[in-house]
Length: 507
Image (cartoon, rainbow, N blue to C red; front, top):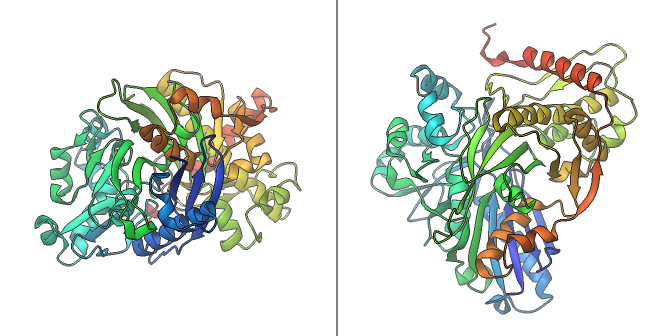
């Protein structure tokens, strides 16, 4: 085995990165795909476009490595690891492989009313005990229920075994294997509201609650282990698929957070902080999520790692809004220079609740709020407020995680596109009061998928070899005083309260 190909299927683009034995990226390709917003609060993807874009970038990255050789030369030299946007829900025809409806994206809020109904029925405690999750439209279960109820004939076809459900990992694997393999792993399954965190199985009581037929569900397989092989027609050779994890769990693995108490935050479309809690799921008292981090082969003792997670829905997407919605900048990297033109926000706060609020507030009816503006407010103040909003949301999650775990986190490892923004990372250290540590390789989501596949195929020996590859690029030390930090966080919470419940208020 010479290389690991990581397929990183994200919310706005599909990427493929080829890693060598030293964990270095030797080839990569990326392709954006369309975002669809057919109604307020709805977010959809074309699952066929996701597959086409992921296949195209994977083939391109492999061709770049082969440098003109036939793709047949890949046999025996490349294994595949997959990581994916989580919770996005696809329902497709097993016979034709065609989706029966657009994929419902994790950001979609159309099932918020159904979630309200479940809470009124007193199901919140049951669901949290079994799944580690809060009831929210974010997760896949109510999305799948919606599709079964609103796509003509879908429920009857599902009950006859004609339809297959999956998150994006399952959809990719189905297509990679030519429709022969319908699987997911525990890290993705644990995001559906249908998976029991303690038995590590689909839960019959939860399936009845959401009226989901078991026949549509994928088989749950380990995150680390050969789960199938690509059809030869896909890349010109049959390649083992040996690693699989949801994007945030993969990033945690890629950051080498193997010991309980280690935490990372990924700055992507959203922001997601995960802390390794070891081989036990920690029940949150502060509206965080308990989730499976990854699962090794069944023969390994204590093979399941759990995490606490806090998710922020709008991080990089906030900067995209400045670019595409307000047209304040031409490209995302411009925001750092624009925000640096002013020393502070002038008491302006942006609460980017465009898709509701995630942890620790979980308000699906919150909406974006820009508050504190005066005649002296400029686009530089708004740009700085947008960066601060990302860091302040993370600070809320960081505090909740410390309360839940009883661990005073000593540092935060960071990755993802926006972690390259030095101003944002300094803000983050200031608002947390602990160092923020950026590694040399920030593509840790793809790297984590590669590591899982590499461990399964003997490409890397063990976790110790992986940990030795992790290296610091820059360490950001907090510079803000404790008094200023406390005041800033309190003012931010005032702004958040103003944003809550807006879409649930009758004019």
